[in-house]
Image 1 (tube, rainbow, N blue to C red):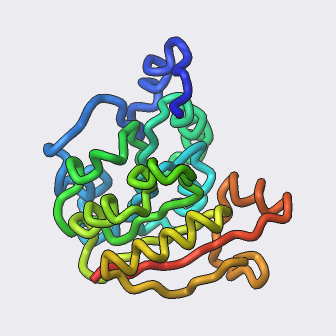
Image 2: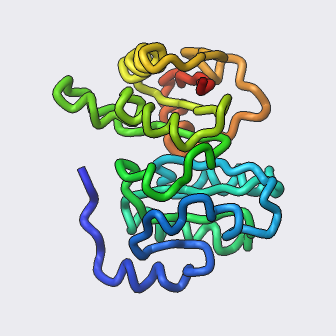
Length: 216
């Protein structure tokens, strides 16, 4: 369910135009993302699907200044909250886009992305809504086109049902899956960056599921 947009949200987002894209974009962006960031066309491009309030992608961009990051989020009001945090950091390797992930193949060229992050997406628990899940094979086929060969999908969720469903979908799509865990924080790797939801659920004692998917 989408949040109701507050008045003047779009106008407020224009104050962050140097790193937030609000206007409708399409094929003109395909293959152009690295040029938008810098002249270094060899930099890796990582994309987060559903970036929320930006805690995860902000930390990732800070820790990896030589990698370009794009955060996609459909809710403009949520992007506004993320933009306010990010502006203080003055990061040149991070962009936010108000965008519907259902159209992701329209704005990225074939094999343009090195890694996708899917963190705590909506589980859409009803069976009739399964195709809306971001790990449904319908979406996986889109990701296959825009990810480089051997590109990666890093997936985290608190929802065990969604996680088990996703593992099945990865197999159906012919992807390789590694680093599967149903309790990420039991032996949390030092490189793990926690999201806002991750901290929330972990504090409640809910185990975090995670895996890494290799596209082939």
